[in-house]
Every structure is written in structure tokens, then in C-alpha cells.
Image (tube, rainbow, N blue to C red):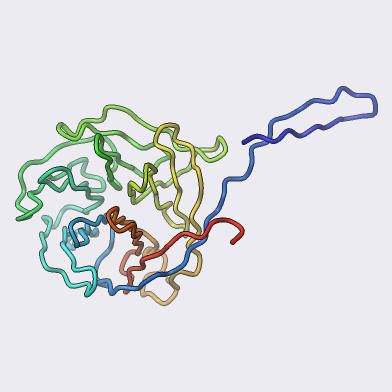
Length: 257
């Protein structure tokens, strides 16, 4: 939506109409339920599937892929990455889980049921996060660009430039596909961008200020908001952060409410 601003430099000057972009709407939140979350989990990737959360954790020597009971926070299945790798985002595709690493330009493909490694794949640059729709996988790398991957070959087939009112949105991190939009944590902020995958435009922001006081954590500089999961069957949205003791189910509050 565009409003028009008329301005004149001096008396008698020609009035010029300049386009002014309307502010991107900002949504609040309401906490519906709180669940326990493992404080050892340096959350880098998160998704919900068949009643369980699947979580990828980072830090070299501590990186894992986990299957987690939502209600209890109990880890019921776990795969440890080799110590040299810093685990990043994950996504499910068919019978597999796909996982990125941060700077090694190497990804892993696991059997979802057993967590056995099936193969590896390579990509250029850093790996931050993954999500998907029914046709494609989307990948972030910390920039303002999302890459689209072929789900079978995991090769990059296209890119999306993410902008808010024409300005690039940097530090796109953990991703989740929610009702035709891509939700993206913006690293080191309390905000989630709601991205139109067709245009890359940010349709709205979710402001999670006050959700959790990271000042109470041992390393508040790094233990920031990161982790979005969506239960499409029951329309439940979950968020958490790195080494947070809680995972939150939230609903969005429209602007002005």
C-alpha cells in the first residue's frame, strides 16, 4: 500500500508527489503454553513432526540432532555430530532429515527413524537454517538472501532477496514455513520476519520483546532467541532460544490490539 506525500520547496514551486511506503505491520504475541527446554541445547534448527520436536544444536564438540517430547522436553533420540562440526539448521524431507553445518560447507542427510547418516552434500558459504514447503527447501546463510534448494539433489536452484520497504534484511537465521509464509528469526534481535516467498518482501514483523529475559542466562550475548516450529495440524506456533529453559507456544496479536 502506498501513500503520496506532496511537498513544495518554495512558494510557487511545482508540487512533486513522492511515493512513501506504509510502515510494515508489527504483531505482538500471547503465550498459550510453556514447555521445558533443555538448557544444554544451543538451538540452531527446530521443527515439529508427528507429535515430536526435532532440534539441531550447535557448538563444536556439542552439536546434535535430537527428537524431543514436547510436553516433557525429554530427549528420546539423539545423534552426536563429529566434534569438528558446528551443527546448524535442519528440515525433514520424505523419510530423511537434512542438516547444515556452519562454516564447513558440508551437510548431512539422516534417516528420520534411526538417525543413521545416509549421505552428505556440499554448498558454498555458511549454512544457518532450513525450512520447506511441499515442493522446495529454503536455506538461510546469515545474509539477506534465502537460497532455494532442489529437495532431491540439495543443489541451489534460485535465490530470494529479502527486503523490508526496499531495504535488505540481514542476519536471517532460523526458518519455518507457516501458512504460505517463511518466518525467519533475525539474529541478535527479538523479532521474526514474515516473508512472502514469491517476492521476498517482509509482510509483517513479530515482536517478541519480553518473552524471556536472556539477562538471566550465563551467556546473554549469545543465548538469543532462535528456533521456530509450527504444528500445521493443530495450528500451534512454538518459539525458543539458545540454551533457554523454556519453549513457548504463542499466538499472534494483530497491530493495535
